[in-house]
Structure formats: C-alpha cells, structure tokens
Length: 514
Image 1: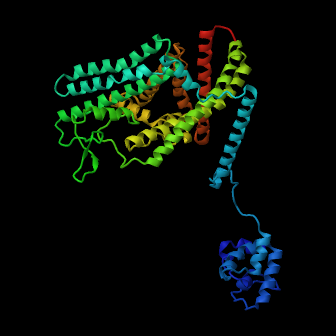
Image 2 (image 1 turned 90 degrees about the horizontal axis):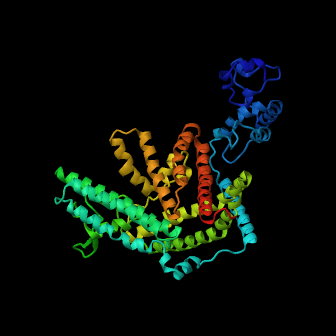
Image 3 (image 1 turned 60 degrees about the horizontal axis):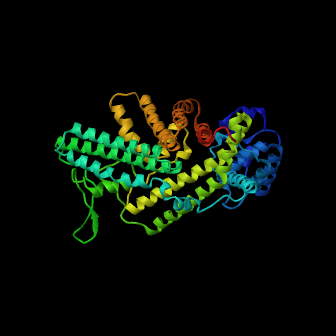
C-alpha cells in the first residue's frame, strides 16, 4: 500500500469494500481514484488477487476479513479468511493476572490453595504422630468428670444461674405501675452485677473448678448478663411507649402458642405487658440471640433432616476439636516453654509459627461448630427464624468489617445497646467505636484471667491493639492487601496470646522448672 493511500485516512480506507477496490491495477493506478467502478472479475481472479495481496501485505488481509466474514455464507470460510487466520495471531489484550483484563475466575487457584493447605497440614500432623505417638483419647474428658463429679464445669453455677431469670422477671412486673423507674433500675443493676460477681467469686475460691470449667461457667453467665440487660432495656422502651399512650404497640411472637379456630397451633400476638411471662423470658434465654424484642420471627415448622444434620456436625466437630487439641496443640505448647524461659527469640518465633497452624485450624472448626452447627440446631429446635449468625467475614478488607460480621449476635447487641445510645448522646463516632472495643476487651480478659486465676491483661491488650490496627489497615491498605492484613492478624495474633497465658500459667504454678 502506498504512502499516499495511507495518508488519506479513514475516509479513503472505508471505500475499500471489495477485493477489487483494495488492490492496485497493473499500471499502479486505483479505480476509485478516477471514480470508476471496478470491473466484475471471476471468482478465481478474485482469489488470486486476494492471495497476492495477503502475501504482500498482511495488514491488508486484516482489513478485508471483517467484510468477507459478513458476505460469506454462515459455516463457510473464504480463502482470504483462511489465509488471514494463518497470518494474524495477535490482538490487543491484557494478561489474565492483570487487573485491567477483567478476569475473575480463580477457582482453580483456590482449589490449588486448598490442596496445598491439606497436604501441608497432613505432613505436619503425620510428623506430630511420628514424634509423639497417638495422644487422642475420646473418653478422657468424660472419664475425668465421672471420676471427680465435683469438678464438672459450671454444674453448680449453671443450676444457680436459673434463679436470676425469675428475679429479673419479677422486677419487670413490679415496674408496671408498682415501683418507680429509679427503684427498678437500681434493682436491675444489682441483679446484673451479681451475674458477674457471683460466678467470679465461685471460680476464684473453689479449687475444684478447672480452668476449662471456669471458662464455660463464666461464658454462660456473660451471655445471660447480655441477654437480661437487653430484656430490661427493651421493656423500658415499651413502658416509654405505653406512657406516651401510643395507639399501636409492638406485638410479640415470643409468647405462648394458643389453639386457633381450625385447631392448629399458632403464635399469639401480645402487647406489653402481656409478654412478661415465664415462658416468654425462658424462650428468649435459650434462643440463639442476645437482643430481646417483641415480635421474634418464627420459622413455620421444624425440619427434622436439617436438625439431624446439625446434630451430627455438632458431635463430629466437637470430638475433632478435642482430638486436635490433645494431639497437636498440647505437645506444641509444652515444647514452647523452654524457648520462652530462655528468651531464645529465634526458637520463640519458630514455636509461634508452628503453633499458628493448628491454632488457626481449631479456631476455624470452632467457628463452624458454634456459629453454624450449634446455633442453627438451637434455632431449628425453637423455630427461631433469624439465622444470620455471621456474614462473609472471610472477605474482610478492614478490621472493623471483620469484627462487625464474624459474630452477628454480639455485634447487634453492641450496636443496639451501646454504640447507638452513645451516638444519641452526642459522643464522637470514633470515640464510640473505641469504647465498644474497650468493653469487648474487658469481657475477653474477664473470660480468660478469672478461670486461670491470674491477671496479665494479654487478652485486654490484644483487643485494644485492634483499634490502631483498624486505623492503619483502613488508611494504608485496600482490597486484597487489607484482607491479607486481617488474615495475618488472625493467624498470628491468637497463638501469641495463647503462648503468653500458657507461659505465665506454667511459671506461676510450676516455678522455673522446665
């Protein structure tokens, strides 16, 4: 193609709609320069000209391929197109791993990661079995309780816990026109404080209560504390509506079922104070939620197959957790004491990384066992309709997103009864978030230090460290980098806290012996 033809631009090139228009005559002139129509040529002549043009200039074939493809019958290729396919093999495109390519199907890479993770953990687990032998004892926990019934975790404390619900319900009934709001609030504060002080004193003073039993009992009382606080606050809001003489009150699904006219059982709709019944408060106590409300969503029926699947998962994963702790965690922690006592930093890092794998795997299994299997089992049994116990925390790109989505019941409680009331009082949003982390840090330390009977504040400092970490990740890391930072904090942060508490507990009870 001549330079003159190339300089004519798109207007001249658009007129080349046929092969005859695109090739030169023998004398070097072009038909379209004189305004003449090209003569009709036989098909063989067209093919020969196309072959010569394609062999002389590959770019010419790329320009005429689109027109030939439009004119050729469907399912057939012209000779020019065939030549063009053989000569042209490059187009303008990005690499798949480049963000500009728009490619997003990484399922194969995800499967590869899962396979590599399984193989790596299998190697570590096999190495552990070769080194320590089989340490898993399925009946060890059960036999421990059978030999010493007085060491049953939270047995007496769980029985004593049952006295708080009627006491709290009595306060609510008395608050309906019998006692003043101030007197009722004082009684509620006393009752709620007893929920934290009474089990703590029992765990600290009774030697037979083991650390595991203490964690279980304090966990139950902490959940009860949060539930009864929500119960009291919600009923206070109902009294405020009642005092304002609202025409339409909120109704409750959580009250007893009554027979409908057709004989089927349905859930009654009651208004405050009709919800102040023993059945209502005990339904809320056992329901998988921390936030009380009038008008709980209810599922239409109990799905037996779903219930049995969740029950099987609960039993299987519970035994798996115990086995992994016995076989993998305990010997790794025991071998970590000497490097920590000698302050051998290289060995400490090696022990920390070795403990991170089983600790994180156990944490993931615990998450599925508790938030999916156990809570869905209880919800199905009670026909509790709200099953959003967690969201996609694994996609967290910020620390705050993780804490807001991995434990939805606690997040809803903090949002409803702590964060939003602080905002309504005019407190700064960032200060309110810090206060939420402060309360969470208190309960984390409470659930660890009291059963271990020592106060080192590792859990408290670990939770408060989330505040600057959240600021740093949201400010400097985005997308996949932020998600990686969240995963690293989960994988490394937890074993650090575990080793700190185990080391201090070991030194406190066994002195400096290794």
